[in-house]
Image 1 (cartoon, rainbow, N blue to C red):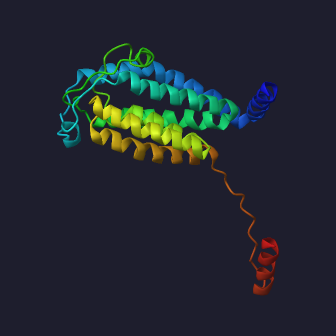
Image 2: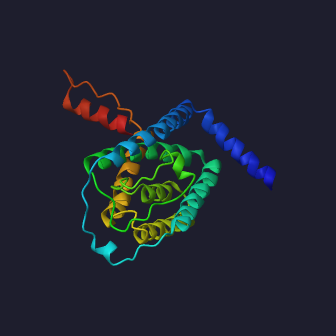
Image 3: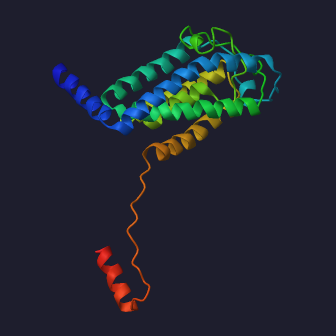
Length: 239
């Protein structure tokens, strides 16, 4: 059974790697993501130094803050591992997720820059040693609009292929969104906006990666040609 699974994985990746277009997408996408990892600490260091706006959030006012960091990151890293396993068997999942994530990160850079916010009242900082790599091991509180945690999970749901997987991922999105409010990490608008923006970016990325240009058929020359002959030629070409 294990030999069959291993063979399936090898065949899938061999087929993908033998395609020049897919191979190029994997190489370039991975390279860009590595660059992004080094840019993130610099960007987050910048936004922490600037002043932002404190929003009134009725939903957060109704929820007493509690530290649920362990549960939040258990779900997030569990879903990332789950998606990684699926991507091992289906390389297209990795390609789509990698490129979509690049555009999501760019969108977050733009949104966070244009919408400077101060952290919600009662915020309890998230603590996770793995995520600390991307934040430069600093406490980041102004990484707000739109929610990166919600965005990552939403993107996983969109990239997964099986209905059951999507259902599991959707439940994870809902649960983490609620827990982020419990810990007052984000404003409600940060969380509600994330799935909408990610959905649009995902479909734009799909169009960017997989659009195919239809081959145009040569048009019939109509100069000095009787109308009956033109119609006959067009009809024969369509057949």
